[in-house]
Image 1 (spheres, each protein chain N blue to C red):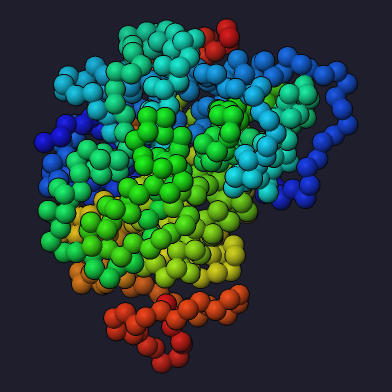
Image 2 (cartoon, rainbow over the protein chains, first blue to last red):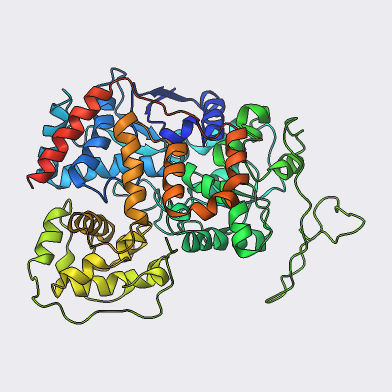
Length: 337
Length: 200
């Protein structure tokens, strides 16, 4: 059993419930033992740094202090959300680097009878922990239903590979962690060039023109490369790509239908866990095709995926795909995958 | 409020009446760690890597040139850091290892203090988000979305109905905020932190 303290982050309770459920489902089988920190608070995402520095770091440091004093005999702190992970890691790092900041933050924590010594915790993101600490051998052992033939686009987003002060990820631009994890589940991993391009974070809510363009290029590329599903490691990325996909389509008058799932959901699927326990059906862009590709019955409430509208022929013609599985034909429309 | 417009070319207004050569030092000292801002060689890698560059008044490179030239007002009026998505591409590619993203955060807080930002959308969003956190200890998306969209994008609200309904029907958005138990502790910590920041 590998012991970790868990900092869930705000989205686990609502917008990323699928991540939370699937994480719970796969933890025990691979030997990941998690203990949630008591009474953790929001990390502030990217919003507090731009208002005021010391309070931003103090907000994060309260969680570090609570984790450090947790009586569980482990120094390892895990965050499943990329932004939470970056904030926890960055606060620890900058407190180490900047004595003035460390002093102010600890004075602030003292007002709440807390303290944090930078360097007391090993902070990591869930993906890195599974790939590097637990190891893929343990993951492979649990696979009973390989995701053969499922074309997945690995999408890590920006905050786990960068800035990565503690060098936990293999590369800043083209990390391999998600690729090899998905491959160990038997999936066909496409060489997605935009693995670590930003989803825009809060941009869809702040500057929609730009925000939607960042989403469009990610989804369009995955779609052009004939991916069946995009796989994410961050609730914000998933919410943007999945939740805002409809609005993005409205904005550009496109009709993409690209399901976006958390990597833990695919792990659970490969482990033979019931899709309902993995949060399937919570996504706004139906992932029914993923379940059908693997041969699993979708949960009852999943609405049927809408028929794919024909794409306007523009730009260079894409090479014809090799035949994969039964072709879907309808009477009136030519359905283009 | 208008959406962020794509900038046609870098715009720099006429030279400021009095250069503020302390600006560089001020920004560097307010940024955690050693920012290395003075080491910039104007190579343009940051601007070339930036996914938001097309929407910026000034690319990061140009902004740093203005900053080092002491053009305080132009810098604090720029939309550059408000459109920054914190993707850290610039940070890992900068040949001089400048803490660009952290400098952007510093500039945001300085622009708020000086009340010089031109478009309040991003600043308001931050304040609303943090308002929720300071009240409940957790973020509260429904409260944030309603307040933010009513103020800045009321006309988008009808178009967002499908997404809103989708999120609510799947219980992916809480109707009421969650409150942490020891809110008093968090409030004391933040209060003290603000005093310490003001004393900086």
